[in-house]
Structure formats: structure tokens, C-alpha cells
Length: 431
Ligand SMILES: Cc1ncc(COP(=O)(O)O)c(C=O)c1O
Image (tube, rainbow, N blue to C red):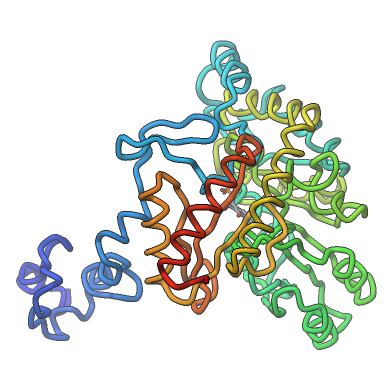
């Protein structure tokens, strides 16, 4: 053990962040006392520990404890609030039909599969879900994962290795970048939605290397659609494969809710991934592609092989969710009616909603203080919206992120517009 980590030095250090009085001048702690201690970043770093950077009242807005949920509202702090922050796009998270399917499956199959898919963790519910998802997403084969994060991690780390190149939009979801890291692949990025920048990277990389272009179908913080037709044309020209993370588009975009490709009226890309926690109202993820590719992913994806499969109750609820998504088109219609009403209303008031064209609606602000103030003011009106800052979005574009549900009404949107208008004027954001 070296001097810096000796028990006497560690005893001199604060044991928890509670023991630090942040209003006081920092305690005189020598480099020697901090150096070499793994927990120093937790106690002192402003960069990596938000508790040392953000005012307590603002930090409280970032992790509000929900006491109860209904279709479009939550109970927080004894108040019923209009929920504008969840990914419950089709209101299925609290749909009793999903709960009933889950309860029935628990009674039949128990609480857990108690094993990974390759061992004892596959049952007929998994196979039915995957068969139906493949048909819905119009791909040859689908494999279900335990989350959308795991699906991206699992697909990319199985497909790419160190000699391969991932070409990613600058704003892709973190799970895609983590998949590239796990794969040990080379990563090249192009400017968000900039096809010239993508083409330059493709030219630079050349024809020899194996290439996978990876984009989100709908970007989770900006609410814009990937330019999929152009991306696929470039990929064909330069011999690259395309993977789309359709987390926010599945169930939401396209006349039948099939996702980004259906929205543009084109065939699915080479690989699609997605989550089952947003429009599907449960938890889980999926990867879809040609059957040979999916067989390869199944046997090479550590996230798939070394983790217990989705529980029977969730799998049964997901099958029911898919049935509803395919058959109840009115939910999607109402979601889009609310989206257009809110987006056009916010723009008319003078807010900056960036490039959003979907139920993800950011109100982009000048700095984090404005962002927290607007969230706090909306909270005062019993409207629950989320503050989103760097690293989840560019440093100079903090935002109040609104996401909508089919359970919202046009009257809800008018209430939000009235509140945003009133607070925006009092804060001097709009005139
Ligand atoms: C674009 C995107 N991909 C993947 C994920 C991860 O999905 P899950 O929450 O199911 O892990 C998310 C969730 O926030 C997302 O927004």
C-alpha cells in the first residue's frame, strides 16, 4: 500500500459528501491526501459529480420521486401533474390489458426465466414476440434483448471488430458509442444530419474497410428524423451497411407505426434496433436483420449470451402491446395531432424548438439557469417537464425537453402553451 492510500490519510478525508460543507471554503486537503484515492472524484470533482455543481433546488428537479401514475398524469409531492417527460408515446405503460397479459404469464410461467436465452431462458413467449416483431418491422428475423441499451450494445459489439469502422452521426445515443467501445472498432463521426460530412468520411475511409453507418431514426434530444433515404443511397455508393436505432420511431412513425423507414416509404435498412420501453410501454429491446445476420448476432453477442432473458410477464405484455400498436391507429393519430398543435404553438410564441418534427419537443434555451428556471416555473403550474443539459445535448444548447403521449389532449397542449407563454414573457425569453 502506498503512502497516499494509507489508512491514516483516508481517515482524514471526508467519508461522504454530506460531511462537506459546500458553502464553506474547501477544506485544506493536500494533493497527497487526494492523490491515489478512487473516491476523490465523488467527493470533490465539479465535472463528474453534479452534486458539487448544481444548486440543491435544481438538483431536486432532476430526480423527482413519482408517487403514482395514470395515463397522462403523475402524482408528485402530493400534486397531480401533467406528465410531459415520459417516453410513454402510446399510453401503454399503464394500459390494463398489458397488465392482465403479464399477470396471466406470471401465473403460467413464474416470475423469471432464470437463465440466458442460449441455455434455459427461451420459451414460446419469446419466440412469439420475435416472430411478430419481425413481421411488424418487415425484416426476416428479430431477436429480443433485455433493453434498448443492450440491443445496441449487443448488435454493434457482435458485428464489428477492431479492423472495422463505425461511422456515426455526432448525436447518436450513448449506447451506440458504448457498443463501438466494446467492439474495439474504429469510430468516425459525421456532423449531425450533414450528408456532405458523411460522404467525406466515407471517401476518407475508402472501400477496403468494413463499414457500418449508425444513426438514430428519431434523435432523442432534438426530435428530428434521420435523413434515411439519403444515408442509404450514400451507403450503397460506398459499400457500407446501415444500422438504424429506431427507439423513438417504433410504434410512433409511419402510417402503421413501423418506424423511420415506413415514415419515408422505403425498405428497412440492413440492421434495425429499438427499445420496447417507449411506445411499447414495458421494457426490453430488439435487433432485426436478415436471418443469417441475426443467427450470427445471437451467437456472438455477449449482451445476449451472458444475461438472463426478458421475464415471462414482460414478454406477454409486449405481445399484447404489439397487438394494440397494430390495431389501434387512433392513438397514433392523436399523438401526432398533439405534436403538431404544440410545435406550431411554441414556434408562434417565439420559442426555439430547433429541428423537431416529432413528439420530442425541445425548448432550447441560452443557459442552464434559464433551463432550470423554466422547469421550476412549469413545476409550479403542475406541469412536469425535464431539464436536459450537457452531456445529453450540446453544451451551448440546454433545453426543457417535452415528450408527448397519445393520451394527451389538445386542451392539455393549450394549457402548456399558455404556461410557457406566461413564463417565457416573465423571464424575457419571448415578447
Ligand atoms: C435512441 C435511444 N436508443 C436506445 C435507448 C435505450 O433504450 P432502453 O431505455 O430500453 O435501454 C434510448 C433510451 O433512452 C434511446 O433514446
